[in-house]
Amino acid sequence: MKFLEWLGRYTLDRLTALGTITILYAQTIRRLFSRPRVSSIIAQMSHLGVDSLMIVSLTLTFTGVVMTLQTADQFIKFGAQSTVGAVIAIAIGRELGPVLVGIVCAGRVGSAITAEISTMKVTEQIDALKVMAVNPIDYLIVPRMIACMIVVPILTVFGDIIGLLGGLIIAVFYSGISSNIFFSSINMYCNAFDMTGGMIKAVIFGSIIAVLGCYYGLTSPNGAEGVGKATTKTVVSSIIAIFFFNALLTFILF
Picture: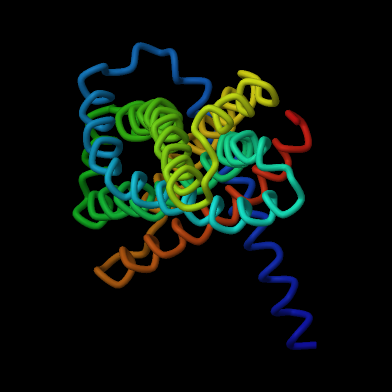
């Protein structure tokens, strides 16, 4: 009976949290176009996006390198070296680019948003906003969501290019595939939607990271320990959500 009570309580708590996050997401989407503060959006883009360029570059470069190392030799054995470039481009553009950038941003951007907002909550700055009749959604969540919805796709495009260049270097200098064959396979088998579909995923991933980061920041327990727990929940929940919605969007888009 105790186990069933715990299971029921746990299920209700998770469903309550999911419902609250969904309502917060809907409220934020509804207020996206209600004259957001451009200066705050630009500041958040600089803080959340520019500082993530290095880690995104490293992640996608080595992803492209490893993918080419694993696939090029096998394709050459079967005489299919003319498709290596297309396989790398499609894999990075559709899946690995947006997913890996989303995970990197979940760890860096989501945790930063949660830490900042939970610190504001602990120091009662959010209560002060409410006293001054300032809507926390407009002031805190909307600029961060817009910034993430802009920055994550830009980082994804940048990561796609970097990852493809990493694969090209290995294909040319390690596997002996000429650059002309590499790029001609991309022109032959790839289309624009292979990248734009990944950007659609990145926009949704960015909005999810922003909302989850803000939600766990607003609901964090008081104290330094509460800030740490909220940050951990943000990263874990964001990564799980990214994997779930990636599967769903792949089924819908491709």
